Image (cartoon, rainbow, N blue to C red; front, side):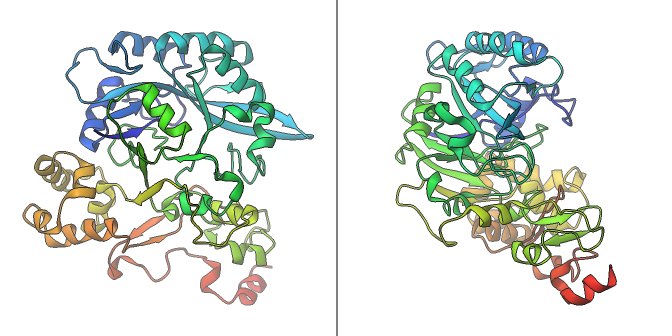
Length: 432
């Protein structure tokens, strides 16, 4: 059976999340999206854990859960969380986020009992713990050998293992003697497998992709995911397929174009400056407007650590497919300002009703079949995204990238001050 899994999302108890997130809403939109396995997120938060205990029913021998009120639902839940560790390494403060997977609510309780000594778990769905990364892994793995830990959104400038501001240059320095328990890295929205393949030291890790969604809306949940082919869906099968990088079971990941991510390029949001790695290096990573340090983007950080040329692919690499949320595609074609718009939902619902779920629309529906349901331009846009024939104006410093499907979608000057479109010397002189 084909399993599409998003293992990293958040509840309403995490900061900057939708207050409407609940198990019922997650299950509803996961099914519409086409996910049949989704992480619960935030099991470390006491109130969310109580909700999970009240609203989920455990399957007898799979290590997964269904909604108690709709046991017939096709959506299963895996018990997951994200935690933040803050510690000092070689006289530098490190702030690293990690994803934790566990096979039951009972083992989640055991993990919480261990972690509550290092921080207040009730403050945030993604708690901040005063412990180093090796100690976190030790505590989690001593609870149960089936548990799994991997670094979250590995390349974002803040709070990630390779982050430009508080990260490491390799996995071993971060996890030290506990690195033996690290089998995967989460790519994050601003990087994709080809970018990670440029580092030979990452070859032994499986690259997983998840949405890190802060809402249940279908343009957030499942925007990145993992695709498995399994004889039987269970926690153990999923974790083993990841740990072993088994290409027979772990088929590919679904990725947004990394340029769509909020930290792909280097830049300054307040100064409206976005730069490629090469241009940022020419300026010494100093903003030409305010003269402060630029927020170094993921592409530049990868370039700094890479020991292989762009385009290199390891022999044992798991495949990937680039997609973008269907709502975002429709919004771009219709020229509306938001995927919340009723006319976007109208088109979206027609497609989902006809083909079953969003992934079926994005991956499986033929152009001829799409043309029978929606306007030809929307059908063409869906196919172009699937075939990688679209442009994305890169995101930077917390600003999402912008999708340009047809030439008329590309504005001549997407950023008021975009250094690569100007004479570098003139720009610098004007802002001295």
